[in-house]
Image (cartoon, rainbow, N blue to C red; front, side, top):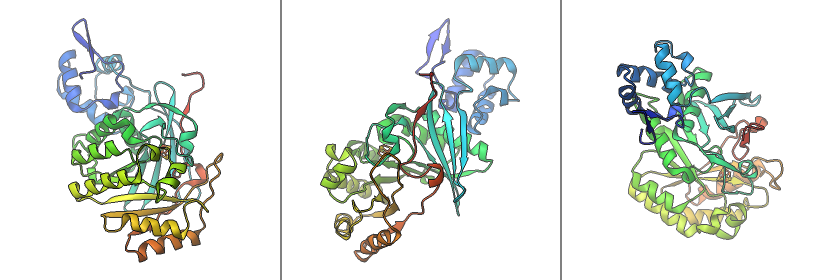
Length: 357
Ligand code: SF4
């Protein structure tokens, strides 16, 4: 509520998106507006179940709904497109935000349940050369509530409980640190979405100072690092972040994280034909990760129109995995999901509603 401005003795929070509110915010709002406090739980219940329109809040009186609309941003998280993969049933949701930015969210069905990949920013500043999200430029960071809405609204549309969330869509989560931490808090809330921290995975391209900060948070959230190269020379060609932080600095932060939290780190490694999929790269990666509490996810990279990268063959991916495993590194070949609807890793894009910005 600290963002609110006082005007004629009451709080005006028009710039605040409804799903940014927690139960305490709503309770304080009820007090400020002279609304009975129990209305706060009712409204919070609706918000947590993915209702972003006050019209849906059937047990809340019309005058209270009108006051909510006066003070907060409602009805703005709009589904623009819903695509379903013919290959594996993966679903892509394109949402429009109140200011015209467009983001993408992906729901994947696994044996244990549905996992949703959320965006943390509209666009991305990191400039990875193989990534579609980097091509369209940067709009803005999402608020905690806009990240939460991707889970709550998607869950409402699908009509099934979402089991896990990966913050691996458009954007670099550690470039939007405060809001991502706020999202984790909101998602964890037993009175709200009630999603356990162990069911959330945060993926970073390797912003070392933020990994250090995240270590100090002591959260049970899973950490994943997009590595994609075993040495600085190659990594700099794929990921500009490598110019700011060397692999040595990155691995030092990773070691400190695993020692402090006793939690395993997963390294994402996309294999690009003839670029980073050679046996030499596999041997170098083995040496780099040896002895750590680490796991490697190997992905035959998705081809993104407008980039020069080609996907590694299944034989090359298997050979890479075998070299890692024979060197004592745990590695999994990840099944690619939703590539026919541009919903796979590196294929998501930010957009804007024409004329809205
Ligand atoms: S891969 Fe991730 S960090 Fe890199 S540009 Fe794409 S969204 Fe940003």
